[in-house]
Picture 1: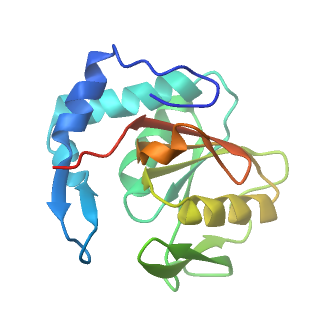
Picture 2 (picture 1 turned 30 degrees about the vertical axis):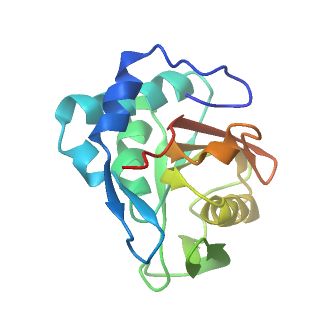
Length: 188
């Protein structure tokens, strides 16, 4: 587990199981990308539960009122974490997926660009939020999520991902917000 504020806890046997449960799909969605497929992690009840439990243990006593999940894979982890720590879950969705009034934030990916949207009023001033996603590669998606939440008045306490690229070990932050991730990507 990596964070600017925590030393890695590589001795935790759950981390090895989490790493091994993630399938690597070469050249997806385009040539040169080693896609980290967490859907295979979801198929293993114990590993999936361990993943959630690690995040819950970290956030349960931090006064978090919002768990914001990034579409789509942040939706796999975010609601369970929110329920366990007694917080609201706020979905951050792709364009035109949310009914009603939304605010938007465009961002650049490692292989393109995209946009996230959030319902107006989903967060309020004084809310303490964490952002959950499956993987951080460039930080673009998390940066957009931070911006949306802050525009709504929330204080983003930390971003959390299951997988973080190794260059984030040295600077565990995105837009000045702490970044916490469990494992590094597998190469095969």
